[in-house]
Length: 402
Image 1: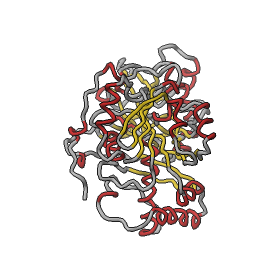
Image 2: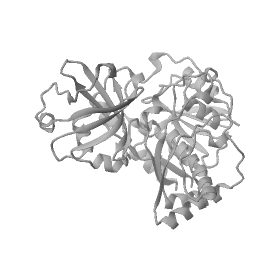
Image 3: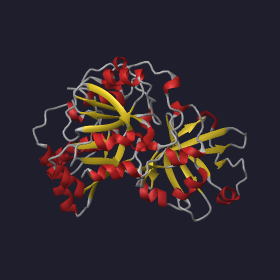
Image 4: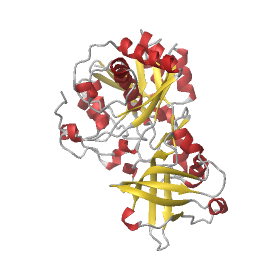
C-alpha cells in the first residue's frame, strides 16, 4: 500500500544564512553529527573512522560530475542555457561521451521561449580560439515541457566529454544562488570520482580525504564502490502536498558481480556513503525479485517496495541477480531505479548512513526519516542549534539505523 504522506510534515526553518555557499578550506574539517540509539553528539569529520564499527563494509558512489551546463546565444542576442541531463543518441553514457562530431541529449533549456527553430552557436565572450575552432552548435529536435532533445554538432575530432570539459560549466545546485566558479571544478567532485555521468555531486562524499580513507582501511573496513549517475531530479522540489503524487526520475546504476557476492554473504554492518548509495543498494533487492519472477532484471519502480509483501530473503534476491549475470556472461548489473524511500520503507541492506543535511520538504528528508524511524527532527534541531552548515557544501552526519 502506497503510504499517505504529506510533505509539509517534513518542513523546517532553514534560513539562507545557514546554507553553505562555498566549501571549507579542508574537506575533512566539516562538523560531523553522530546519531545512535536516539542520542545525538558531534565531532569533526576527520574523526569519522573512530565512530565506524571495525570490520564493516563501506560503499561509495564513484560517479563523476560532468560540466554539463552550456551557454549559447541566438543571433538576436538572446542567451539560451542548455543543461545536459541524459544521452538520447547514443543512449549509453560511455558511448555518448565518446561521440565525435555529433550526439543528442535530453536537456533542461533555460530561456526556452526565446529559442525557436534556429541552430545556436556556443557563446564565446572571451573569443577562446579553441572554442571558436570547435564551432559547437545546438539544434532543438523536440520539446517536452521544460526539457527538450538537443542535437549537438562540432567540427573537430574531440569526444563530447572533451567538448564539455572545454566549453561547459559545473552545474552547482540552484539553491547556492551564484554562478559556478573555479573552486567548484575541484570541490564539487569527490576525490574518488571515476565514471562520468552525474549532473549533481553525491555530496556526502565531498568530505572524504586520503587521510580519512586511510583511517577507514586501518580499521579493517572493506571499501567498495557502486555507480549511480545523479540526475537533475535531485534538485526538484516536491510540489504536491501528497508525496504519492511526486514523480521520481530514473537514474541508472551499476554494481559489480563481486560486490553482489559480498553483499549476499555479508555478516558485518554495511555503511552507505550518501543517499545515492542507499538508493542503489536498496534497489538491488527489487532487481533480484524481477530476476526471480520474470527471469531478467527490470528498472525499479518508484513504489515497488510498498505495493505488496515480499517473501524472498535478501540473499535469494542477490543470488538471482548473480545467476542472471552468469547466464549472460556479464560482470556487472546495469539497470535503472526510480525508487523513493519514505517512512515505512523496509531497509534490507544498509545499517549506517553518512549524509549531509537536506532541503526542507525534500525526498531526501523522507529518506532520512525512514532510516531513523521518524526521528529526523531530533537530528535537524540539533544541527540548527549547534551551528551546522547545510546542503551540498555543508556539514555531515553519521546516522545509525533505528
